[in-house]
Amino acid sequence: MDILLLGSGGREHAIAVSLKRSPKCGALYVAPGNGGTAGIAQNVSLDITDGEAVRDFAVARGVGLVVIGPEAPLVAGVADVVRAAGIPCFGPGAQGAQMEGSKKFSKEFMGRHGIPTAPYEAFTSADSARAYVRQRFDAGVGLLVVKADGLAAGKGVVVAKTVDEALEAVDECFGGHFGAAGATVVIEEGLTGPECSLLVFTDGTTMRPMASAQDHKRAYDGDLGPNTGGMGCYSPVPIVTDAEHDEMIADMQKAVSGLEQEGIDFRGVLYGGFMLTPEGPRVLEFNARFGDPETQVILPRLKTDLVDVMMACATRTLDQVELDWRDEWAVTVVLASKGYPVAYQKGFAITGIQDAEALGDVTVYHAGTALDEAGVLRTAGGRVLDVTAVGPTFAEARDRAYQACERIHFEGKSLRTDVGLRALRGRDAWEA
Ligand code: AMP
Ligand code: GLY
Image 1: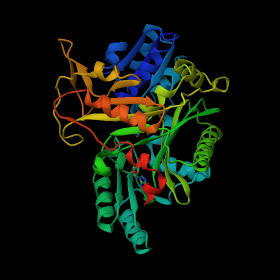
Image 2: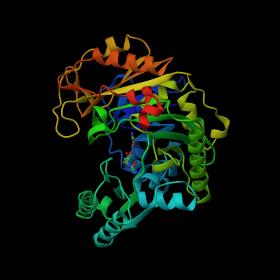
Image 3: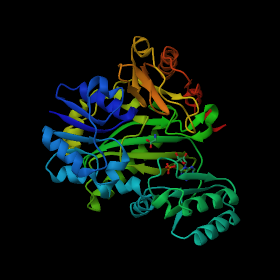
Image 4: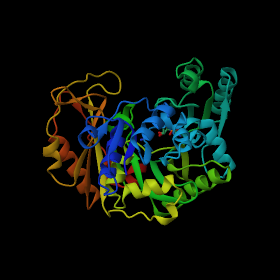
């Protein structure tokens, strides 16, 4: 079966690698793809938020499955157009994508279905939002989180410790900083604790949980510096207790059942971003897709054929598929361009990937790379490579990932040196 995959990041390279491993995968097209997908699939140039263009390509090539990686095409309703043409599609339609595309929608949804989350209010005017900020801090709340309602590429959330910080964030949103995404603002109480993601496959009725994973969003060691798209990740998360894990799965089940009850046909991945508070896990956000870089640590451990899993989600037969996992740990370290996420240069030659993979149990996923006309692999983005290792213990996987990173070279190579370090030290040290 020929497959069309939409997206261009490390997540999509990881999905492409797993799809290609399946004997059922025929031609694999990736739109637009990157330097890594070019090596194993056919990159194609398509406007991936244009449902008709995606559908027409899929029809012309006789594609049997369309897989949507990023959120923008999901929110744009590409899955609806593809499915209307009778082509199985992995990814929710526009309605289901609102779980990620509108913070207000997802908070109201959580309220309707008893899913634990931080108390909040939503606003469409700066005056009432500002009044709420003052009132909450006066009432003794120590931390407020200001969120632009719509998609803002991970930049629409400010965790404010003071009234002034919160007011500034409110003004930024309503000042048009995030365009239409900031026309509605959600303000919620700040929670504390380790963060953890739990992703599930679903066909709209049945759900199959994946392993927990944890991202590192800040740019620099010690969780300092600006937020990024993610600088490293590991899976499973060793500090999660069994009780917390069960609660997170129960919350995800409430979400999947809630979507079905509301008549929202959700086929793909539902991503729960949790905070493990002293009162139990609380949902910070839902995403309507695989995480990036979570996918890079989850899929290498999946033994079940990914084509089977995705087709089962797309055709509502997931009850017939069980997931089988490698009983190992996975760690990804992101190699970024110097200066990311603020300002950085591109176009530097990359060497050493084969050496890194020769270590064994190492896969180097490409995030921002491109092949130049001479066939030389060059940096083409802020996050360049996701260096992933699996191992029989968390410590071994982590050590191997860092050894692999040492073998890769490009000008301005930057990385966090503490990916997984807090988790390695255990929960008590984390909370100390
Ligand atoms: P979101 O896109 O809603 O997940 O928010 C992005 C990041 O902001 C999360 O990964 C958290 O680090 C932080 N965050 C979001 N909501 C809260 C909250 N209620 N309390 C504390 N931190 C939060
Ligand atoms: N790693 C966070 C996300 O994909 O949203």
